[in-house]
Image 1 (cartoon, helix red, strand yellow):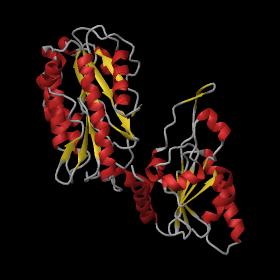
Image 2: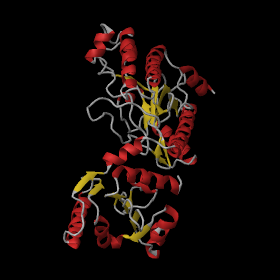
Image 3: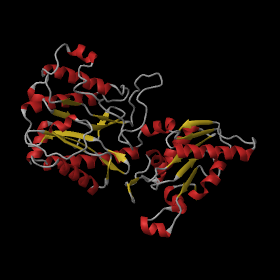
Image 4: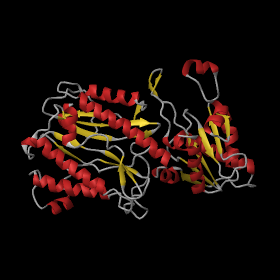
Length: 435
């Protein structure tokens, strides 16, 4: 994304917090995987949204109306010796020229300069309680700011959780963000198609995980938005199965929940298909029911509708279908009110999607009612059925888990399914696997 896009993100935050406020936004830290080896670094989503700056340990300070510049960045210094070992650093000069900081300083200047940036402000926004070390340092900076003014200038007395304001901005995607999410969806959908072509009995689940990661990385999505789920047979009844260490067996289904991350933005797709390329009759009956419920949920995803509407639409279809297939007995409306579906469908039908796969933003308004969907929001739509291998379930359906998930952008007049390029009709799946 361009420097100007990040500048507009900051401008929107400044408008929300007002001229008397100041915001402190920390970057992510590097974390150790094991002795001498770190996990691959992934920038904090809030920090990335506001700055685009890719390095760890930095601190961004947003100071509305400050004459010397509203965006001040503290970052690691250039260090030729460390860069020889661990790679190039951007440094303060690069933060200004390449990332649009109005001013940038080394982290060594943070304790001296940060209290000065607090003076004259009445409200402080930062991620309260998320990092005890930062909480302690902010307490110290505020104390130093008060001591330096001796009561002659205001210092923030009110502290507000940054996410309360920032996350509502992140919830509504701008056109540049939507373009990145479309690309993440395209890459991930193509990888799902490759897995359908590759799948065969006897193949390890891990082989499909590796294939998916390779296809995404080769297309520009080096990292995954979350650990891939490749669940053959009854493993698909474990919602977050990630062992991916079993063999795929003839006559069973495989559920793949995987999405790449492109320039920080996530895709989230689930497809379920037969290992041998052909649905059996019981598999097809359950699959058609889940697909019908997903179509109903997607149809309910439109501006002005409740964010809960897709879930309720899916529940109605699934409950009627479970009665039709003999898995539930009774009046569908009564069973729906009683939640009789819960042993077989225990999660909600979707969540926000964006820089995080489970993205930020409130689902309910202040009065507790479900909020309305609005243009620019992106949700997942992912109904499923999970039928354990146990008594009380018709034998033909036991041990089958199915989930179908797409990423849906709310538009001005309806919705757009960003992940439509991943086949999901039984006919399309079987045709692709046969090819």
